[in-house]
Structure formats: C-alpha cells, structure tokens
View (cartoon, rainbow, N blue to C red):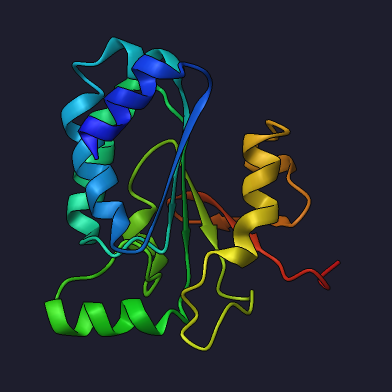
Length: 172
C-alpha cells in the first residue's frame, strides 16, 4: 500500500483523503505509521483519514493515532455496537476492535479523533457495510463540513469528550 500511495503522490498530487474499511484499516494504519513522519509530500496533500468499521485491535489503533496526532490531519472513525463481523473478530482474537463500540469508551481516549457511532443506521445483515456512511463522508470530503455541523450527525456528550451519532435518513 505504501508503494501505491507514493506512486500516486508522484503522479497526481492534490487533496488526498484515505478511506479504509474493516481489515483494510490495518494496511492503512501501518502505512500511515511508517510514511507520515518521513514523507513530506504525504503530509502536504493528506487532508483527512477515514476508518469505517476498522478491524484493528483498539489498543494498537489508539497508540498509532496518538503518535500521529502531532501531524494535525483530521481522522474520523465510524463504528457500531451492532457490527456482527467485528463482534466475531473480537471474540476470535480476544481483543477489542476499534470499530466495535462495546464500549465506546475505548476509542474516546484519542484526542482529536472524530468518533461517529453508526449503531442506529441499518447497513447490511452483518451491520458492517460502508454505503450508509457515504453521505456523511461526502459532506466531510467534498463540502469540508466539520462533524459538529454535518446534517445527519447528532452531538453526544461522553465523560471523555464528544462523539457523534449518525442518524438514519429518516431521523429528524
């Protein structure tokens, strides 16, 4: 993935948003940990990082994002308490998964991370699909709207800070 990313940056430098889903999040996280500190071109063009239902141990996710926070790149995490794929992964690995918000407290420890709880949004029978988040992702990437102002997000207060609840299309 790092080779692909560097080739892309050399051919088409522009605003760059990186989105990873599920197990692909591991490749993105590893690449960011390796490349962001040493790659000025990546730092120049990277405008946002989005993890959707990341199937990564929460402790690893938090540790890497904490190290990378000094680069001030907006990072968004979409997760759910109803994601059956991540529930199974958590059971098999015996490690909490960053995208499985049981409890949400574990991912609230990273400062500057926009945590978006998509538990209320119907996805697929596993609760693991990316498509229901696409409108919100578009508001972030295309319209450059911060989470606290996006149309389908409701601000939620937590003892460790603020997170956002992604409402279904029919929610007011």
